[in-house]
Picture 1 (cartoon, one colour):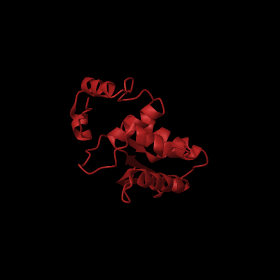
Picture 2 (cartoon, rainbow, N blue to C red):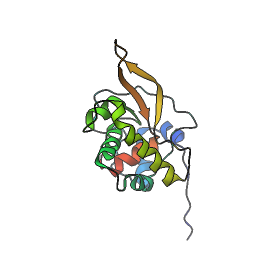
Picture 3 (tube, rainbow, N blue to C red):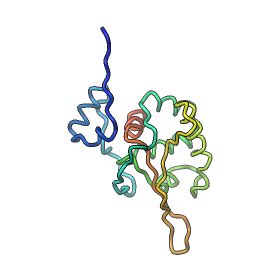
Picture 4 (cartoon, one colour):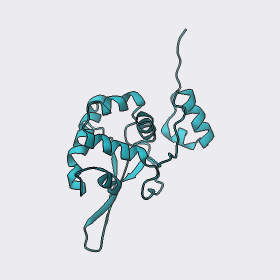
Amino acid sequence: MINCGLLLSTAAFDSLTLSAQNEVLSAMGLSGVSQSGDAVSSSKPAPQTIDEDGPPELTLAFVRKLTDKLSDKTLTVLKVIALSDTPQFHMKDVIDATSGASSYMDLRGVWSALTRRTRKILSDSDADLIWWDGQTFRDEQENYVDQIGRVSALTHTSLKTHFGL
């Protein structure tokens, strides 16, 4: 018997009704995965149109490779991303949840580790797990307050599944 497969782009998947998305996930053995998630971050990122080119799509198997032997700090960052209602997340939520981080500068090593690991497991020297919105939010004194990042929809779902969220 030959196993056949069907490739469904994230754009096509996102165009399905929530019911249909859940059926597809269930057929893939990912039943019980909530698209919206029960945990809500302190504020929801605004919906964003995703280009044809976007962050790399990591399956559950790739997420397992990505998270293998990562530091607690880096795992915390990935959990915060997974807890977001959408593939978008706020940097301020990551900073607030990460022990020892008081600004985005304290997370440079985390982003670097995730980029290196993503490129290695995908064998793609240009892959960036996280795409950052070019806009940064600043207060009246021009101090950095927040920025929005995003992962692909598949990566977000895979992270939720991996962490049991």
